[in-house]
Length: 116
Image (cartoon, rainbow, N blue to C red; front, side, top):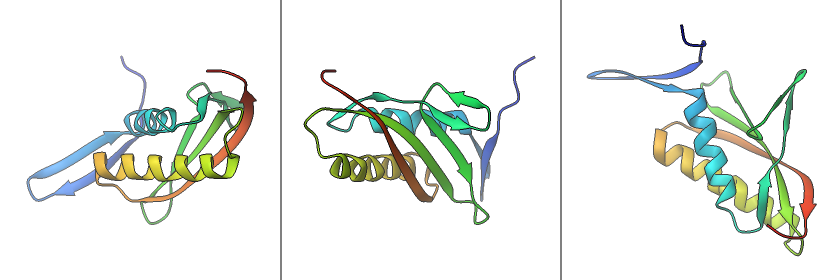
């Protein structure tokens, strides 16, 4: 039997759409890695476990998506500009691909690398 997965449900006139949280975190991970200056994803701490994808997702009381991501930046890039670009890229990708509302994208710059 498959492992239990959390789903975000959208009720439509024709029925319901269920989107796995794994799909949403995968969208976020791809969006992060497409940002110029990002070397790789880091690890996100969630309790005692660490997410190998570097992305953690929660849903707030208004059913909006909250994303936390850890990134390793390339040397020479503005950390603040890179983080803003990551926030914009993640929010835009999730909202355009799922029609869900993103409340926040928290970016943790956890390292720096000389080359990709």
